[in-house]
Image (cartoon, rainbow, N blue to C red; front, side):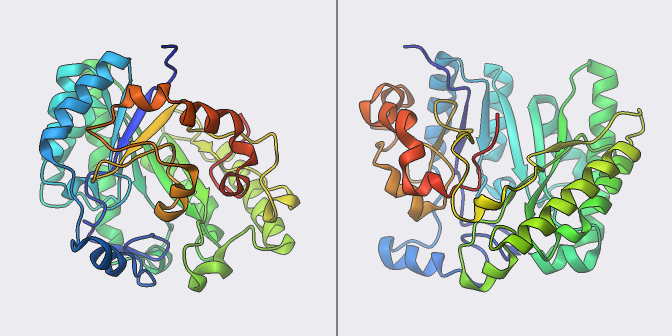
Length: 341
């Protein structure tokens, strides 16, 4: 098999989170996801069985997969078996790519840092404002001052570990681009440089709820022009405000919008996931991308783990056909994740 896949995401505990971010498919105050989940399944929280994790790491190593991401839905550091990821990463040589809301719950920062930094390629910390007012408007229940202090501790440990071992673990601030927080993007760039953050990454809003539709930069031409000005300012700020070593904070996916994007993604924009990544849900459903849960079902049924293995999906005609023809799919035509190579 000509295998190009290099990363998989395990949605270990999507219903576990200590925040209520307004744009979150499951935890937003506008979401009824958990109610529908209970009505459909009789459970209020899906959690991946511990026994699957080692088997997935084993198959991943056989396939040459380089990274595994613990859940990007919910807070992965609340998963009771999260330490297994870091232990198995050390044993297999597969790096962890972590996305966390930056609250680092239940442990001291030194404990988390010792677990995470030595085996992690990138830690993406959800971050949505340069001021407490904006951050708490988006990430409900966040203690902004505490989050900043924890980031500082985490960066300090990362830098010390690098000096001792030569292994560098990247730290990223991950944003959701919305009209109620991106007026602070340039200030987030300045703050990132001062904190010695490597990268700022983000994506435009998935409008799961009518209550947040007005926050979408793609909703009309005026909003897109507004976003493009913000991008100009952010790029200029990244040039002028450097990290302590003089390098720039990398701006990833902070790109200008074409005025046609409120109707359809430009044809030349490509999927960053197909034939590169796969998702396995807490209940075993295998998916080709991270589109909202119900919408990604429209892409097809790719089986359930552990009955279906990662290799089985990659070799299936259904997956190969999607990889070849996704640009004709209605969901992919509007996807906020597609981008220029």
